Length: 324
Length: 280
Ligand SMILES: Nc1ncnc2c1ncn2[C@@H]1O[C@H](COP(=O)(O)OP(=O)(O)OP(=O)(O)O)[C@@H](O)[C@H]1O
Ligand SMILES: [Mg+2]
Image (cartoon, rainbow over all chains, first blue to last red):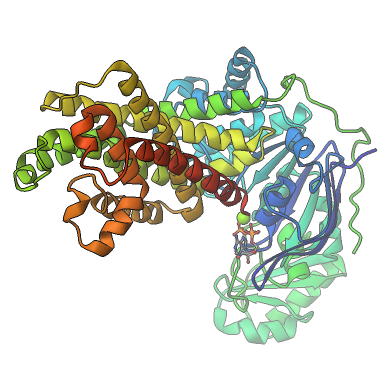
């Protein structure tokens, strides 16, 4: 059976920057695929390549069975794109915005009206549909933009960072809307910088960094690839951090701001108690100690050598929120 | 590296329910994009309003403030001025279209449109056609103000129709050129800056003062640049023989020249515009 996406050796350079660097990826149909990567990883470039917006230099890419180079028209018939910024017209109403796109997707005038109303309803925008978009909140604009990519009922929905810049509540609302869509059978490829988003929405996650795919798998597969459990110790006094790091063993990551040490651990609870005990014996006060399964943050860190929300400054590991 | 992801469901992609039956024709595409643009302009009335006020101000300024000092050889200055102001005023108004296109490009609208299964040239044609219509409306309104402040013509219907058809051809060429400017610059400020070049261009034409009064080197430029062709054609058609007698060339020369300039501009700009549109 035809995969939804099939990419081999994708390469795209902008001047000296290799936005995509010999990237290989196959995504089966019938699922949500998340591309997870930090700023500048190449997510937008990949999405634009899939949407036939950016020309490929090297490699081949088939979308829904069609070659982007030679069968662009068929590819465009299969996809719906919501780019990184909401491309909606503030002067028009939500409904008018959708109707224009619906017409261009090939709906009749009547069909466009029905499709727009259906999508507004689906995204909880029915009441706002007759208002100019300039009166919408950022979250509503994002939802409307998502709606515009939906009115043509595409087989593959391409979403570039659909929740970036939204407050937690709008994010949750957009997630719920997306989950409804997926339940109705739309395939989705989305990009995100948020591990919790990938974890919650995606069947499969691809981690992209410097234009290369560094890992692919389900959230659980990736977590187990990061290996062992993690020992997490928070100290009462940050002055003890370096001494404690030596005593704890296993080359722990030090998070100074949070007075936290994180190290891989293989021997379960017994080993945890043993190693934490070494700190107490040395007179180091422990505020908190925990044994946890690795999160996607740990996976990301172990694969790319830096945390997800960190772009230029790599020594300070910063705090990362636990995945929801 | 091989990164084949396992298949959760092993079904071929099928078309979801509610999908449209066919695809949009070129005409549908053109209509939808043009309608959206017109609607947008009417929803932001200050855009058209400002263009009209600007044209009216120019009219009043030249007619009543500067007009007395400009000799146009026996003609009433208001008669000399109106064709010039209608044609060059349209150029000033066109800058707004370039700015809007640049803003739309930055917003990602054209990324979305390019990702849709539509004839892409029709998208741009729809945008340009809507802009041309709006420019045309502003030009006609300027003409109406001109008639109100004393412009008179004895021209017959055929001449008027020719004049108005030529005006539409010119508006279309200008609109297309400014869509290109918006796409090529990709930023509202840059588009606006470039659009301001319309002002010196109109002063270096026969729009406001006779070319004969200009320095020799500038005269060559002024005689051959498109605005002079359009303006002189208008004057010749609307004001008749006494004015044609003052031209360097025949009326036909200017009429054919205007059409050639319009078609030439369209042919030159269309591929450039398409290239800017498709740039990644
Ligand atoms: N049009 C362009 N011109 C020059 N460089 C570009 C262009 N588009 C992308 N790049 C570069 O290619 C690299 C990948 O960019 P891309 O936009 O794909 O990253 P991203 O993963 O989407 O990042 P973000 O999370 O910030 O959106 C970056 O280094 C970027 O600077
Ligand atoms: Mg991006």
